[in-house]
Image (cartoon, rainbow, N blue to C red; front, side):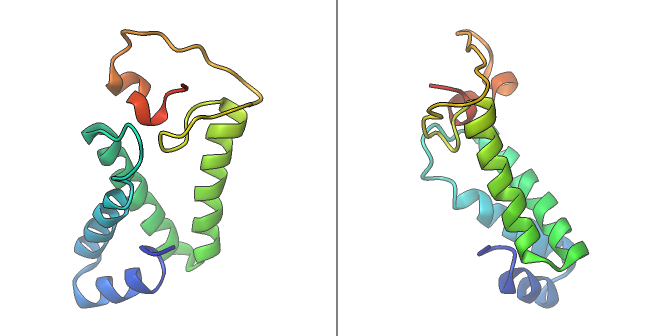
Amino acid sequence: MVTRGWLLQTVTSKLNLSWGIAILSSLFSILHLGNQGVTALSLISIILVGVLMALYMLKTDNIWGVASLHGAWNFTQGNLVGVAVSGQNAGDSLLRFPTKSGVPDWLSGGALWSRR
């Protein structure tokens, strides 16, 4: 909500739309630097998700929709699919996907999104 509410409107009005989205999507990624298992690949993925969320926010003008999408993603990832959410253990879940050692991070998402 930090990078999608007032800040998105303010930055995009001061700069242009593309620069505002790029800067705030990068900030969204930086806010995830403290997560366990973060890699350059995961940061790039988070930037891309930030771009999509910014576009959704600008199209719908609904911060709660963005927050709901983020929450639904985390819930699905941890509770239904059984993979780590931002590097945190998944715990019990509806589904379990076995992990294989030797699978490249670019394919599995690395430690940030793999089950522990």
